[in-house]
Image (tube, rainbow, N blue to C red; front, side, top):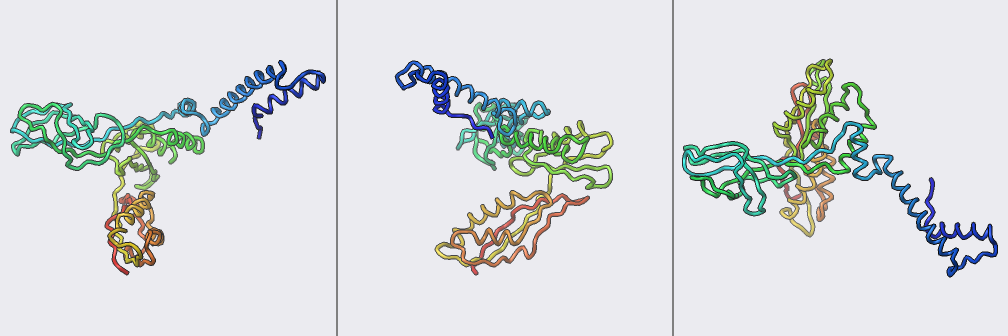
Length: 352
């Protein structure tokens, strides 16, 4: 490995070479030669640093943002944009009152702004449920019947409304873009192999994970399942992935489909012997730790009893545990008719 000399070494080398050629030359710190050596070594050190920066741009895993994007673009990979969260706004008011598309509502607690995406009218029950989107792209908290106020209240409509919102993703980070570039290098295009389908799905804005199941429904079929930042993909996201697959799939594969996985809840019941804490105090930490484990499981994943026991045993204050349920490892099924995704169900803790 080549080591770039530091500034002091460069100056010492300059002065040494002068003394080798002119033994009587003055090279002390007050000499003109020392001043010239300092200036020359400073410039040379800057050139070395520039060459080091250039060398880092040659490979995608050390490149800066601009050059990482160029590495990606040369392989047909573009940074994914952020997506907006979507949901509904429930308005109240006089029957027949119109609510225009683009009506803005503001979340009371956070100030987040959302816009309706369709024209609606207050129904006979005095309400109207209108689809909406966040005004800006990015990850947002999930809202379920949260209080919002209309920025400009339509005639006959109350300003108070209820917002339900989910989804949204931030723009792709450098690390996420690099992961797709490295995946491309490790698994180059293969005329429609499984890696190609995964790469096509992962290129769609809003997709955070994808799995491919060749021949799941028989000969000539390829199935793809995807996830979003909030877990299950929306119908809109599944349709977007399907459109990309339809555009890119080989003619020899007439039946390639994108599906959302089907969540399968795994309930956990355990007895704990604790010290210096209580079961009530452990409920939230236990749920958080187990949720992190389940978050790493893919569709068709295996839920291992031993991992659940390890997680529970690792909680502060737990001296012993007995896992009552599940009674055995839980294997999520992926076959011609199932595409199961194991999820954490209800956690019940008791005293051992």
